[in-house]
Image: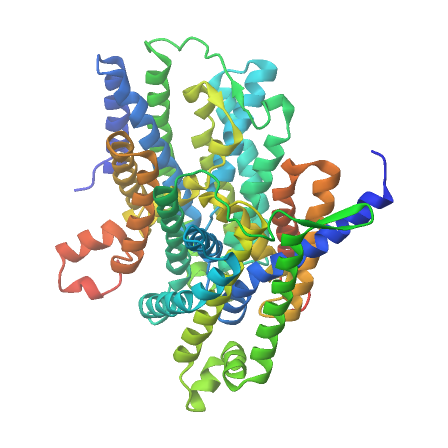
Length: 291
Length: 321
């Protein structure tokens, strides 16, 4: 193989853009799983569901970003309902919730996936907008505008969530519930309501991320399977519940995936996230910025 | 009065003899074709339950073991023309070893972390097979079946009989594990791993044993697949559907008793077969997802739990014996 500095540079730049996107699709999981300890295996399926909702709104002439924003309140309610149901059936019962809770979310993921296949078929779907086909050129290099857009939204989303969790009262309450639920209960707060709110926020953020998913490229119902690896890789590598960690981990994954993609070909790319995940789990399960 | 042989072994022998007679009778070939799939899931669900049900480690990676079992067979068949039984033995050895490897992961990983790690194994194995030309890469490999061993008329009938024997074998192993000290140790570590360790339960050895046995059985279930289909390709061999059905069958049947996963698998896989034929193949995955969610929410102890409740309505609230 000929080593090319130019190629490596391009791969890294593309990886940075991709990495911010990965951070954005994972940040909902970072809250739901990292902070709330909910084994939310259905997160990637919810992400793809949001992408399809964006597609559906897009077919009525909506702009994908606008559609993503409009979906946020709907997905917030969906998240609240999902957590409430999970709490009532599993967390409240206590013992052995582990196996059944996992099985529950695994089942939900399959229902969403097959629901999408039945509704839209297995073909790839994409949205149209002015900024999707274009790209900016920097000298010899061309950067697709949609990647830059996703990069910008991802950064804004991560920054907003980080500020929300550290500066606002509710945000701090969410962090508190992650640290010590019993203590919060003793202080007279209701941890279940806070977790419900947080899970709603996490799902709403995922809705916007889903809109970006379909802006970045075409989606198909089974896309969530690859994203199980990507999202969990980012969240675990970040260290559970760390927002800045999520951004850093997203970048690490994005850059490694893009380098592998350019040097070894597309057929190896899906294994990067899962391989990295396995390495992190084996060597340092608490992640880079573990609490 | 105690029988000299336990009823279980009489049942096992009867099942095997009956299956042998069936496979030599003149029933429609399609029956064997469909029954093979159902039996394959009996093995998968029973194997899943050894780790998931007794020890409480949720393995999402069934598809990895199943697929690697199938690919081990193909490699041996391609390179040496090895007979089916040799292929199966090798598949069990390879996936047993892989199971041992994932068992080592349980040293540090519990709960969802272990589950996600096993998902990773599927995708890594699939990617390796996609990029391995010798076994056909992404497009897969067409295989020529050798003629069946006597006294079987067709290969499918022979595979059906082999699968019956394999199912009985898997259930017997699960039953042995459940009623022996191994099962007691696994249940102890499922409830509280630290407490079990403090009480002298060799938790690591038990977990490694459960992972190895469970993995080897899953590989065995996958080993005859290439010969059954006369074809093998990565996407369908490593499909996450195998993982969800293995888990769903065990949970729907009931994880507390060795018969549970077998009952769940037979019911679930039969329903799937019927739905695939009468409605569509997408619908059969939906059925699995919906049944899984309904059962974990409404009947967490599965069909066995429901039966137990019906039998002893008053003692239903108590713990299983």
